[in-house]
Length: 112
Image 1 (tube, one colour):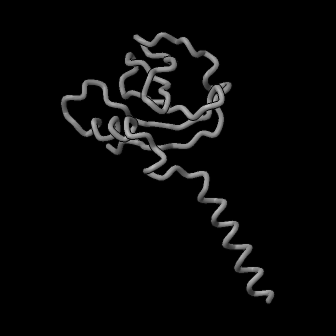
Image 2 (cartoon, rainbow, N blue to C red):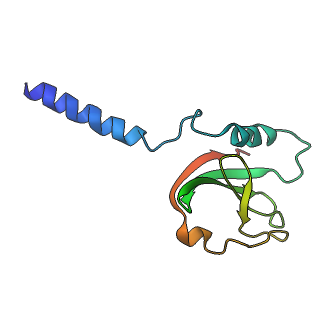
C-alpha cells in the first residue's frame, strides 16, 4: 500500500511539472507560422526568440528580433500587435511590459 501511495505522489508531481510547459498545440498557429518563416533567407530581420508571458490578464508572445533597430513586438494570440518595447523603429508604447509581465515561458529560440 505504501508503494502505491509513493507511486501516486510521484505521478501527481510529474503531471504538475508538465502542465506549465506549452505544447505545440498550445502555441497559436500564427506564432507557429512566424517560427517557420524565420528559416527563410528572404526574412530581413528574423526573430531570434519568442517568449510567452501573461500580461494584462492574457497570454501574449514577445518576439525579439536580431536587429537592434527592429522593434520587439508583444503580440496577442491572433498575432495582433499589442505594443512594442523598443528598437530604433519601435514605438515604446508598453514601457511597463517587463515590470508587469509574468509567467515567462520560452517558446522558441533560433539556433545559429
